[in-house]
Amino acid sequence: MLSLQKAATILGAFSAEQPEWGVRALAAHLNVPRATAHAYLAGLTEAGFLRRTPAGKYRLSWHLAEMGAQLTAALPWFPEARALITRLALEVRSVAFLCILEGEEVVAAIRERHPDADIDLPLDVYLPATATASGKILYAHAEITPRTFAQCTPSSITSQDEWRTEVAKVKKLGYAYSIEEWIPEQCTLGVPYHAPDAQRGGSVVAAIGVQMSAQRYLREERQVRERVLGIVREAEGV
Image 1 (spheres, rainbow, N blue to C red):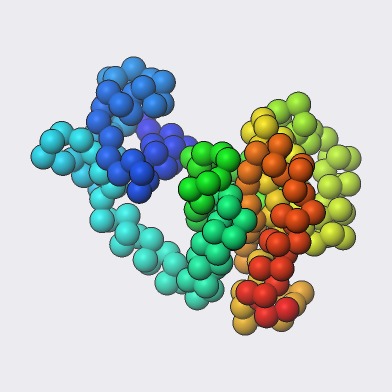
Image 2: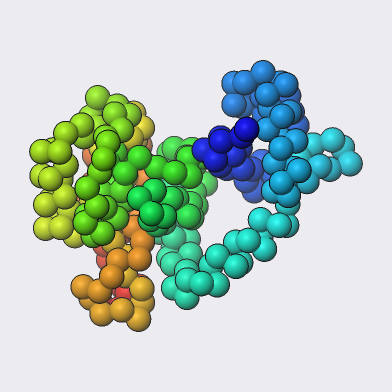
């Protein structure tokens, strides 16, 4: 059976730059046997998430658009947040993201990449909470204590003591960062996002921010932080 994480990875491989995949190309991209890639694609096609083209390749199905419309219709703040992510990507010239909590799972709901960004667009949909800026923000504001710690790199948080210190820092500063804790040589900066009609200090509905190379982030940390915070506060009307 195709796992949810594997299905998310495969669906995430489809983009504006790569709208369709053949079995051979996807197998090479995922580093799996062709038979495995074919099984993945066939399973997602049968489930209605992909469609096969006359040329024998695969594209995303419109069924996904229907599902997305149903999901975002229940989140009245979502259209404004999407516009905000586009603005962040354009003005910071980076990958910009919006993440939400689904139970205790951190989900990357939106990602956009500026053409000049110095990293590729990550494909993961479910993110390690303790190793990402988004996870730190969402867990801190939801007051969730992690059950386990994802040791993605040598810099990842691996103990409750480290986590408590990090959460206190996030709440004090009003933002979070992940310096090579999730992906080597990459950093993320995230801030809590409140629905536009909520008063400051109200419920945090998402974590948004930017992701870039560690080299650039460490060189421009203050400028990036001030720009991101300024854009978000302006959008929230603060």
